[in-house]
Image (cartoon, chains in turn green, cyan):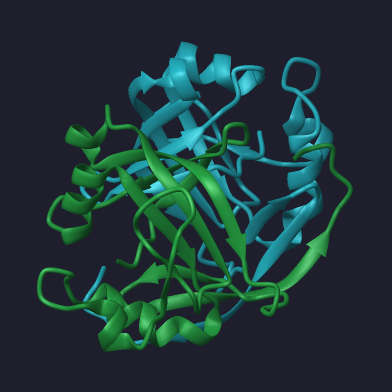
Length: 145
Length: 145
């Protein structure tokens, strides 16, 4: 699936929250397996991201249809996506807000990056097919992680 | 406070989740008042964002110290920030994950934009003083909100 709504929750252990509609195939997969890969695409994959988000795993093998390459994970069963510059193997950690908000808390149990993709530009979904691509990086003096 | 960790949770009613460290003055304010303004700064405010994030409301009147202008909210008590291009008046809606993760669910009860700020560039925190600024906007054909 293509996912917009997610955030960091904790550094250690690394936790990520995300919202997955209960109408989605991915919702049932997440519920039944308790595992997921968060794969982060860069600018070059934008067309595929939208196409992946506009069809359902009920009907389609998305890896095959969109020319994406599954690679084996180390800690969990779902595959990584070869074309994404970062893949996070995750286990569902907390489902207490799933019923009310479809909100899952995931623990990242292994992280992969593709060293061949240098300084990838990420995509920020604005809705209705509109995305902002990363621009300049600025560095300021801060005490914060 | 300066906040990095937040996400959309629902369109209708508009819900936003965020993580606020229990070490922060803002945590206690959020807990005790049940209200908050999420004010979205653009690129020009980056230095102030970092400075605001590197001191505490325990010690400092941040509006005065950083030359920010409070404006009255309509639905809640905390003020808007005049210099931010968007201000969201929020009420705490759900605290059930506060104890475990410092995770609040807020409902946006009123939204303001500054029409004088056109196409503002937002900031994405990468940690340790590094931020990515919005780059190009791309538009793709999508069925999704």
